[in-house]
Amino acid sequence: MKFSKILILVIAAICFTLPAMAATQVQLAVVTKPGSAQYVAAEKFAELIKERSKGEYNIKLYHSGSLGKETEILQQVQLGAIQMAIVTLGPFDTFVPEIKAVAFPFLFKDYETADRVLDGPVGQEALDSLAQAGFKGLQFSENGFRNLSNNRGAIHSAKDVKGLKLRVMQSTFHKELWHTLDANPTPMGWPIYSELQQGTIDGQENPLWVFEEYKLYEVQKYLALTGHVYSVHIDIANLQWFESLPEKTQAIFQTAMRDAAIYQRKVNRKKEAQYLASLKEKGMIVDEHPDIDSFRTKVAPMKEMDMYKEPKTRALLTKLLN
Ligand code: PAF
Image (cartoon, rainbow, N blue to C red):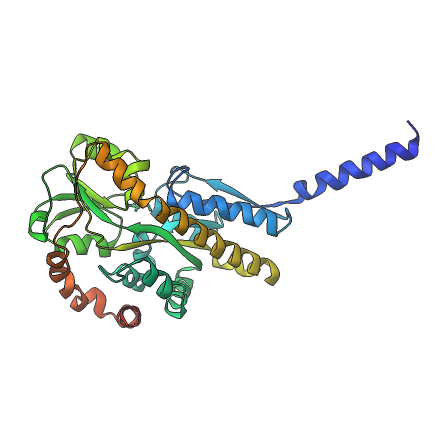
């Protein structure tokens, strides 16, 4: 082969491999596993970043608790040890107290209302509030409406919850919510299969996808579709790191996260009926129409609790309610 041909081949090889070699790696953590709501959003985001940054950035996904529970993931993002994460709102409230307003029980009546509010100016204000703890709030993606399950007995109304040993997220708000409902809540990180299996706790509450993906139907008998909280995932970055990116890159990250969330919400919602049918088929005893008003009435005074009187929380909740 002539020297000029060899030279062309070498240059072509360098041109091909250089972008891949030069890709900047960004670490993104989720506590849950492939197939979970967080993972679907994270995977889509990674795909969009690769495409839209033309290979300049590569998202490395950490999942299945490989970087710890959600509180630990938040600490790592806050310290800048990793750059990004998708985390359930619950554990955020020890970092940014007013964010709990977004999880107020029965705040959103349906998905459309949740989208309208969370994708609008009030949602943006809530995301911006995370800056005080060193987070860039990029987007809300979806966990789903939370439903109550347990092994003690069927739950039809709020009075059936009395004394129930319930796992709640590591969140001051969720603990208070279940205290208000007279349950016996214990905050724990995720996952919780063995605690349910061993009977350390009677029950837990989560969206339907969680029952299916984590096989909770194997260790939980009764399910009531309480839909008591619309649970969001918050898609975040370390604020300092994010602001150090060129403006054009920040815009790519921001819009890729928005588009990944829109995609993920669609996937989540499309599968809901399927999850419900499957859980029934697998033997769960489901109350599809529990007495929601009994729950609503019991939690309504929470608005007047000290944790909601704090001015920033009160201001955000008032805007969310209007
Ligand atoms: O209950 C939780 O901790 C969350 O809802 C989960 C299962 C991690 C999904 O976001």
